[in-house]
Amino acid sequence: EIWGIRESCNPSVARAGYVHKFDVSIGIEAYMEVAEEVSDALENANLSDLTVCVWGHVADGNAHINIVSGQFDKDAVREETIENIVYSSVMKRKGSISAEHGIGQSKRKYMSQIKDGAVLELMSQMKNLFDPHFIMNPGKYLP
Image (cartoon, rainbow, N blue to C red; front, side, top):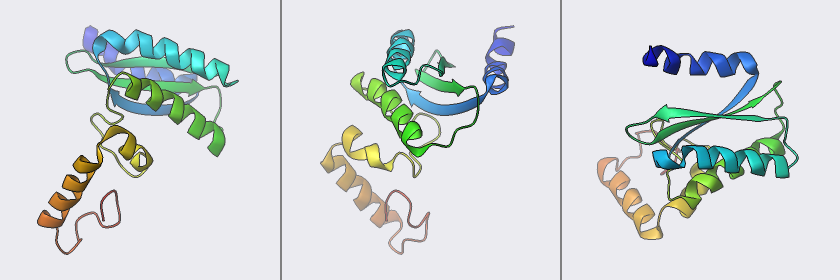
């Protein structure tokens, strides 16, 4: 029964409208706090038409933050505002802006905020060690 409830989350928000999806990692004790903070920040940014839905993996802190809009609106400024609000709330709690789905290209601009320069340099060195000819996932996060 619990699994059925969890599996119904994605279809439920999809029926409610367009969904801005965020896959983050935060302490489970912060789920509600983040949801409330994000909701308040969206309202303060004149985005009160959005609904915040959070569910995740209770055992590991992986949270699926879904911001639901009544209709699709591909406004770049609006998208960036939503993203900044969600990621700021997560980073404030020392969470990760990337849980089970990786950094990808859209989160690259946040890496210097969540990783120390020395860590980023080490990541680059490891990429060069294992991929000296830059053939694995070329042009993505690391060259």
